[in-house]
Length: 293
Length: 255
Image (cartoon, rainbow over all chains, first blue to last red; front, side):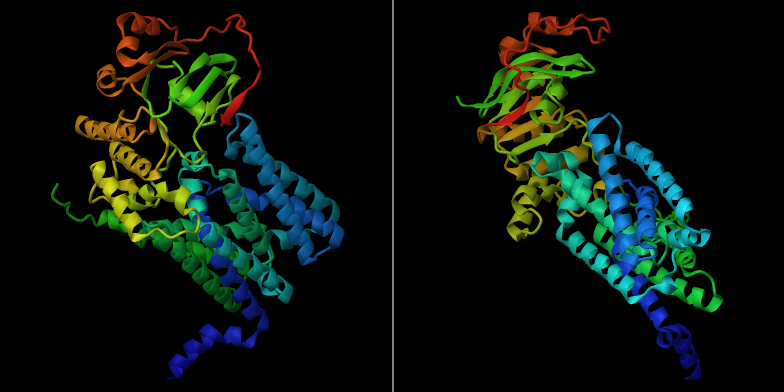
């Protein structure tokens, strides 16, 4: 009985005791619910590194928000969102009107955006501010931040559900979608906007650099567990949620920064998936006899 | 006969070198046409310009089919076959125009999709993932998808290139049934025997139109010889083309 009580105290206590831990948990779980499935859809488009690029691309907007309005969450978020959307749009325009492919034009545009962001910040802020933006602080989420995360997460999940068929078809067979008279680029741009929104929403909690981790790591490991997309989407969200919870626990008991720990936990789950998942390494070693032709 | 597609002085270039050169003519509604010609003759380019996927340098394509009632099977579909989707779902993408984002797929529609799979010889494959199919089997899945599309205009770019003889004959029968249903079908092909057997109309292309009309007249020795002599390599120092564009209207139009 007392053992059960101890476990309960260990697992739930921090959240019972501290409001900041509760807010951090809700924010992380909300992000897990929307970011990870978006990550799965990114991997389907073979754009796994796209999130990484975008997370850097939002920096000039965040910096501009910081310069004009200080550490105000709405300003930083709107600035980051606009910067991300502009980078996506410019990269899209370039690939449509020149011979460059989407990934090549994005690679070119985002480094320029990143460089501009670093220049802006170094001219106007202290080192500490930069660290705050890059690595976030999930334990400092206030009500405003929580509303932002919850809003973005809800909107993302609703849009993903509503546009599910179109989003899938656009990434599976864009030629077919275009031949059917639908505006394929519309789905693509909407989808990328959701990705930007989720990255921006997680930059306060995880930081711009870490946000990608919660998006991509669970998505990549989910692929190792299931062959069907709905299962992968659910699996990724569950893994991201698990990583969020265990990361917060580690962070609380070991007093280490929460953002990176959450990502390390997601990495741990990825490692386990690599070895034990049906499409991972171990099942390949334990080969079962083949069937009759 | 009403016209399905008119090509008016169509020229498409890649870096100023014409892939299609002043192509004129009509595909009649309900016609079944084979497009033949050597590699680099502009066959795929013609289909892509009908689909509006490449820019016309001059001239224009007028398509008399409603947008969304055109089915296109590209030569190498830009499809990632590791995509986690089942064969049945892939075929049912053919309902996109009717079902859209929200409408329900009824049991009867599922049944028709399974029938379409059986028609291309893939009965029993419905629940498999497309990753488990061979290239030829996947091509047949795309054929089954066209069966559900109810298109009035069907464009096939080398549809049988990875498919065994028996299945090719099955698929040719499907093409014939489309023809019987008065759908306009245009297919890029290489096998002259197949074309003579199954396609009443032929367009012989070598950047320019070499011949266009009834198959037995088009595929005569003399025409084939003329098509073969087309230089495949482009001449970097070719002079400007002397033919002036008459009206200067470019692009793809839906009439």
